Amino acid sequence: MTTESALRGAVAELVSARASQRGRGAPDALDSRGVKPPFSGRCACGAIRYTVGSAPLAMVNCHCRDCQYASGGAHSSSLVVHCSAVTVDGEPRWYETRAASGMLARRGFCPTCGSPLFADSETSRGIILAIKAASLDAPEGFEPMIDMWMRSAVPWACTNPAIPKFDTNPPMRPPPR
Image 1 (cartoon, rainbow, N blue to C red):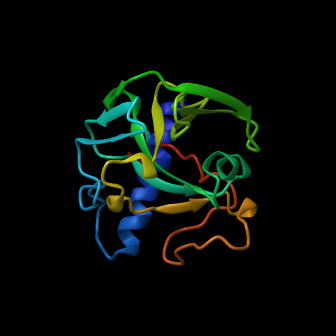
Image 2: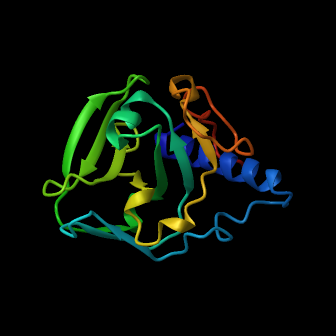
């Protein structure tokens, strides 16, 4: 199984679980959510802007220690999108670290103002990209589907009891046929 098919399978499973939680039948991707394509965002100083031309694949809160450091908070809220749908104006700076998962994690930020903007890993690079929800021009549309890396969550983290929780990464299963 390729990394891309595993990622698609995991996203399809998350969308399906979220749809059934809401009492809907088959998932309709994320078209009923508040983040509609095209959507855009930027860093605090405006030196880096981005536009995404397709709906998010997933919206997640990650509570891993690396995301806590990178966000300066209890977790990092991100929209997962296809790289091919993203256009970036400006040059983010990237920082790499070995995450608790064992994967090389990379975080993109504005070199001028320091705003966190993007994240990926060595297994998802060039396929999917996580975009920081607070960088959206309209962040009020963000609606997390899962909380992940809960084993690293700080005791004061506020989480929504209605969304699925995972101790680490959600399972990577093949896409449904």
